[in-house]
Image (cartoon, rainbow, N blue to C red):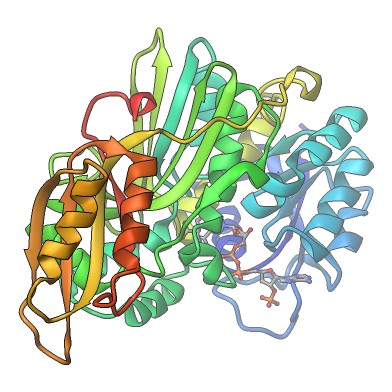
Amino acid sequence: MTKLRVGIAGLGTVGVGLVKLFADPNSRLNEKLELVAVSARDRAKRRGADVSTYRWFDDPAELAAQSDIDVFVELIGGSAGAAKASVETALSRGAHVVTANKALLALHGAALAETAERTGAKLLFEAAVGGGVPMVKALKESAAGSRASAVAGILNGTCNYILTEMESSGRSFEAVLSEAQQLGYAEADPSTDVGGFDAAHKLTILSAIAFGTRPDYEHVRIEGIERVSLTDIRLAGKLGYRIKLIAKASLADGAVEMHVRPALLAYDHPLANVGGSLNALVVDAEPSGQLTFIGRGAGEGPTAASVASDLIDLAEGRAGFAFGRPLSQLATAPRGTPSERGRYYLRLLVADRPGVVAAISDRLAHEDISIESFLQMPVHDGPSVPIVLTTQTCARAKMENAVAAIEALDVITEAPFVMPVEHAGPRWSRS
Ligand code: NAP
Ligand code: HSE
């Protein structure tokens, strides 16, 4: 039997993980596939796997152009440059592409899928979303018989690791981020993770598959975790909440609303205990009912295993359309409006003076907003003191008005920080 000949471009965390799987005699990969060529920037670099037996290319596009390579695996990263050029080269000549590159897919997925359909190539990307958790295939295949109304969850392992470790160890944001980088979780530029952009790339892909729409990254409202402090984590904890970076897309009346933002989850929320580098996805769909997927969302082994699963699908003839249906059947969905009502967490840094709390309560009451819980910390280092509160359900516009009025008070010494409180109900599509 002729084996599919594979070339891997990118020999970092994921690429080396995949080379190790090819070297594992117990892996199913070698039954129907053969690794023949590799590419990275620096041939002399010491890597965690022996690549000396494979043909070497300094230029990944040159590897992608080789007529004897049946499958080009792109594990370089980035939405432009070498990754984009080499994937285009492979697809244009009809070679299949497997990639873990969510940035490339979120920004150029439709154009790449179009090229693939034109040349008869397959474009697969299970590893691009959720690391080792089979979210892409689950939506494309297992949930295809249902209609999804919302997909929501924790889609960035680095942020989840940072928030979890800050809470459990009290270490700083910077210290924990550096650890996440060492563990191979973070993107080459970690601001892609902590700024919420990586989760937004993944949400764009999941939303396109779940709702049958064209990938539309520009429509994701994105807020990262940069402003989440140890104070927030500790005080939210005292109020009974855990902070998570939540990515959510919902479909209502044909319009899609997508956002990524840090949010408070009550301790009994189903996602509150998804910690460390774990990712989770909750799908609201009918008639299947709610589906939940949880597993390791980043790192060498889980991600390489997802790439390998795509390669095995290709070898066994199971690969379908990139986004689950032909590009011509993907709708261009209008942008939905964000939910009008919700509960909120507000953190303020205020001058420690009499009457401050009354002034804040007054601005909230003026907008008909009731306080659910309130915490003021004793002064420890300086003239300002943190105050945090959560509200009862109120109109988003009224909360924005109240925050603007509070910010205008002369006792406010730092821009207020607002996060939504996610509800713990069974359906994400309602919040
Ligand atoms: P990485 O460790 O930074 O490795 C990137 C690799 O690409 C390196 O081997 C580098 O070569 C090579 N490279 C960079 N620019 C190149 C160029 N111009 N020409 C040739 N080779 C080039 O990245 P990674 O963490 O493995 O991630 C790879 C992809 O998987 C990214 O799209 C990422 O978003 C995605 N992903 C990563 C994870 C994860 O947990 N790490 C999970 C899911 C998806 P040198 O080694 O010679 O410098
Ligand atoms: N940087 C990504 C994360 C890798 O932390 O989730 C997995 O896609």
